[in-house]
Image 1: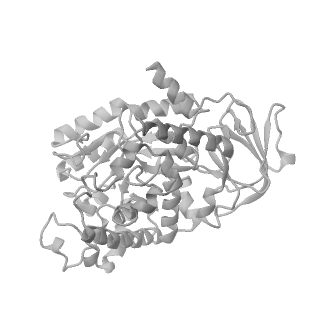
Image 2: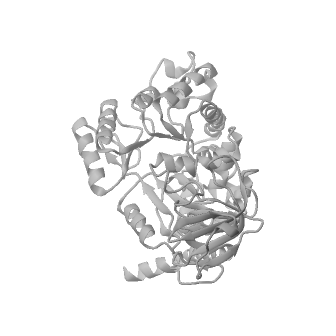
Image 3: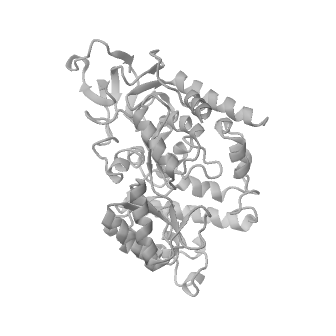
Length: 462
């Protein structure tokens, strides 16, 4: 146990360095002459000095107006842009080796969507060890599903009485949200929602098949993942699903005139959506893009066992699928883009999430794909970033903690070489990150990534 902890600390780092590439959270840091991207509105504020002390933003203003302590470490922000770090609002976090991949891509917090005790432990460690490559972890409890569950390790809930017990377990274990899944019955779903409301827990997840989108919106489900339920809700009168339940919804039979109603119902319910367009796109193209994905540089950081699981011939969901299946998935993806656009234009709230580590959705790196998809769906770069910063903080109930560059906010920040508001591709131009008050420059981040790559390479010989 001690040996594995030391390996973990070697991989994630414990901050003792005071070089320009790594400044610990115990050292006040001033970023001088930087352009601030506050994310309160679509604007930038040039020529600012941002003082960070004790893990928080302590002051922002022109250099002459900011009193710097004697022991401050100054970073030159000339030509750079400082914005909040992002939250990937839909991940499945399984291994510590993934942590540096998030941090090196400006993803400084995650919402984990299938919780167990390790996620609560990682949350505590992140709070205690600010100078490590730990993203801050927000997590649901275990998946609540019907019997048999889709995923064997889920928590089956098959009675109204058991629903109350399942939620009570979630509270006792220390989670702040429950996750509902596809095979729950309608009475059990409603009992889970009622129990969660009584305990003050958020309800996130899929729209159960027996509940449907109308039922989930009637329950004001806090967040709906992957736009589940939406495609079925806009099937036209000629769709086979209108005549027989249990059939797969199809892009072929949608009625676009139904979209405004489901958008209005979503807004009325105050339900958020985390579209996870990246995973939908990847699933739709497993028959023709695998070779290109395998050639991406970031694949060096993915373990051999994960890469083996990503092979569609090994995944139980895809191994017996042929061209017609993936062709339908591609058509469905285009409809999901259309729905995302309509939700945004109609005033429904959206969250930035990738569903990593599904096939070739690489932790951290996939956030850039999701940003691009949201822009393709009609969001401006500012609006796409909001879905993973200011709006994510609002959804998680911490609007005064993070998500904007303001005095008093947690110092989770990204320093960029290019203006992120002109193009989401510019979020890749990272000079470094400030993680809970500790500075990690680009070379420090690259060095940590190399350690991950070397570790994955060594696994190939085992």
